[in-house]
Length: 527
Image (cartoon, rainbow, N blue to C red; front, side):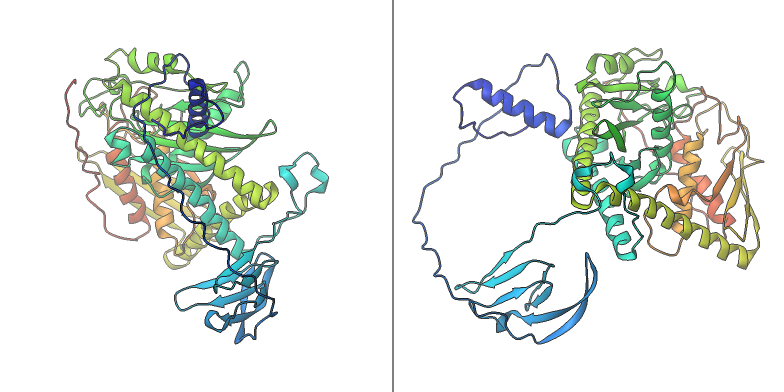
């Protein structure tokens, strides 16, 4: 449901329908075909015009008031020495040119470069803001590569962009929680949202669900490779992809469905945005699609390797319904929630696209792309420094082993290069895959390692692909951490992942192990 305002320019009911469709497309990024529009309720707001207050009298300019001091402040052009003023010392007619700082008893006003503050007759500040101009990238024009200016990394801008990227991912999460319908996503908040470079490298992942952290990048990169391979349709504007297969498509377990949207500009893919949400049911042998006794992947629900959920701007409801319903062990028991939550995930991605375009318009495409890579490099160097420090204190080789409840070992040997700060995480010795569902796909191991490394780094860095750049993985095929394509994995995502974290932290002598389980509880019936 979407609230729309009355169309004042037309008395036709169709104008309300057009307004609704336009707003729906802006919110969700696609259109639903063959659907009737229903008016759920209408509200009437009355406006009673009152007396128009007289405008305040104009006052002559008194020029700049005397400053009570000065300080150093950082603006877009770098550090500036600026004058500081007390608000209570200002009189009507005083003018202050930026950059400047005006101090009140309960707040501080920062006057940007090129802005002007004028004190009105009522004692208010009338601030004129100078429009911002970009020299490095005008109107997002990327056609002339020769005109690109080298952008140097600035530590203050690095922090600002890191928070901007994270803020976009968090806003995607708020949109998803607001537009979803299931308890799992709307109230339990079992979802994650993230931004990626055009090659699928993770830039910022909002701190939602740790087991999603490293896995989503694998899912995005698989879709890029899959759809760009020979004989495929390619990636086109208006497409949205969906997948959940743990072993083949970078998923974690089948209930976690990933929705991926490319961000286009002038026919070129700039970025990707993605959201992963845990759906309450996608079929399988038991309600909730978290069967405790499943022995293969088919028993755990619908398997989606690659599908265009939205194609040419049209939501493919029939296609995704067929996938979710037509399963050997029974389809989804709650299709309406599945479809609603998938639409909500598309809407979340669409909000991220809008905010990314705004960020590019504000700062220029070259700057945004540069700081995406700067942020990844910053995370990479932080992990490398941590590994070097550990090697200097404890040696270049460390080892840990722990066991599942059935005795299956999870063994890890870490070899660190003290010069480069790179490391090899070798899981040789880990037990074979089991005839059950505690197997974990490689993406879950990546998530466990990236979470552990981020926890071990002694500084505040955004969690992104840079954390794994120094790491080489060796995970034996057909082990519990790298099972066959048809092995059951639904429990590995919520249990084995915890034990992998315990093993990594044990290897780094960081802390005692937890109970090695997420304490999962599933209840429900066929209805």
